[in-house]
Length: 292
Image 1: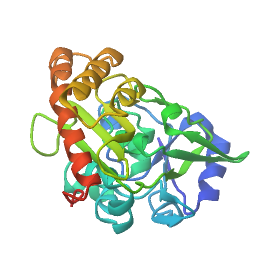
Image 2: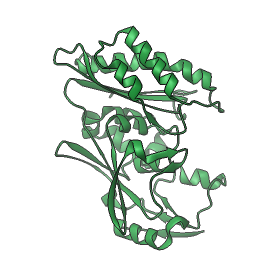
Image 3: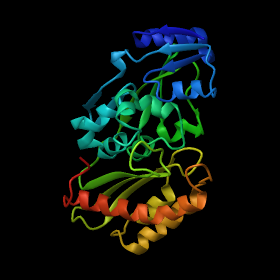
């Protein structure tokens, strides 16, 4: 296996144009190196991109928030712009592995790894995230809900590098959260992860917009439009939440694995969704601070 270091985005693009599918990009290495040591991948070339500073950081402008693909989970959990505009993402980033993983692992790596349990995916899905992918041919934008094609399978082409993620900030009269169930309280892959973003009317009573997404409930992280529609027009009543939970169970495909059985994952959904709705509505009304 060969190793090359890239110092700029142009260098990355040039290497990928030359080598294509034989190259594997390496940033924090929290997924790539584990898979390599397990024999799950055998790259011919590792391209180290961690020091490409232009691909890291958070910027807010023109009603959107841009997140560099090499922004670490620790930065996301602490950045004041993210905590204000996409608090569910900050909440999720704080739960990715342990502190060491958060310090070097990147949001771009978490998405491109395409694990069904990717913690950052659900809050980014409810924030209408769009991914910018660059190659020698130019830059294209892919909505996150079209990026995940299956387990460890994405729409990124071999000659492309993910450069940034654009998200829609939390609007007024809105609240969001990311809730995760694992076998332990920390450093655990999600048995189920659920993100919710609810927008209320000016009186703070009725849900005017609902966005829900899950991980570890299908071969890829998913938005849940059927469940969302059942919450719109409601006041968060138990009946509406129960109907939405039923829709989640009907439209997902959980599996049995070492962490949990599919039936257990399904049983978690009603209580998890009820808590997410409760938190979002309280946060939208200003009755409770967003995660901190």
